[in-house]
Image 1 (cartoon, rainbow, N blue to C red):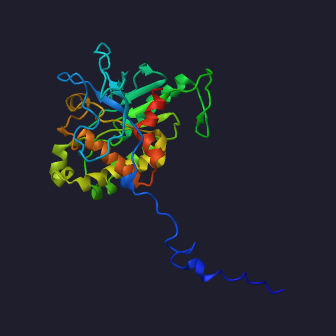
Image 2: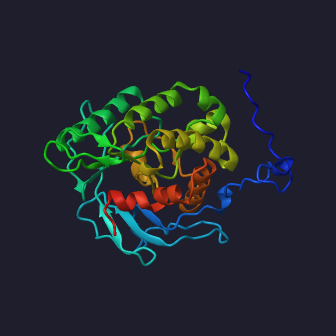
Image 3: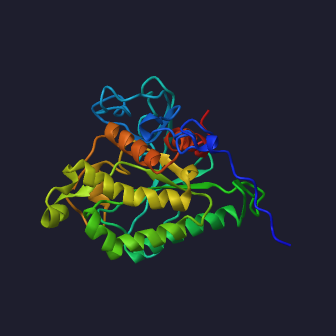
Length: 321
């Protein structure tokens, strides 16, 4: 029997004001209109001269929206340092991270656990080598072993062998890694492809989080090939997007945490890195917030996800009210 054709749809549906017209679907919100509900700065340092760290909005264009700041996580490299101080009128929280020694053969013993979270700083002036990635992986594996084996059901971790929820590992210094090249040669470089592959492997640990911190540049290495390319803001954002986009794809926005300062102050980073360089922070702390927000929203993430990156994820990891 011959199949019957469905009746034709009325042409009125396709008229300019019809329900099926190309202009009938609502447009997604513009990335420029998406801002977080609030901010928690997960990585800041106390300056010796000033009683408080640089505010999150230091250097930000005056016309740029400023969401409320709920809290600030202050990094104390010296456990005997002064207690955390209030920033912008909000209650701070202190962490004492472990700086991974990239010259070691085996990972260090990591005991600096704050509220079920361990912070690891990876100091380097260059993207990590295979050996350095191995050292970081071993440190994460060792922590997982301390907490017991565990699995993840959906987004909820299952308790480990000791009956407790596995702790969280927060890694600073690899998102982004120190910048060395412009976007075109970077895309073809072995170091970049190694970074993507090892980052994807690291994301398989469901309890690992990455801090998205302002970039640093080795000015000597950069100028030798491309001049001061990082002074071109469009090119700088292209390079940053090449690192941030794969990280979000691998970890999801729920495991990316905003911080306003580099993993270590520039003088300290130059001192502890295996290959010292002449480092520079190419954008201010306040500009980093605006650049990160713009990159995340341009990737299609909505208000809920942006709020998570800029504050919600830090609140969960550090159990902040």
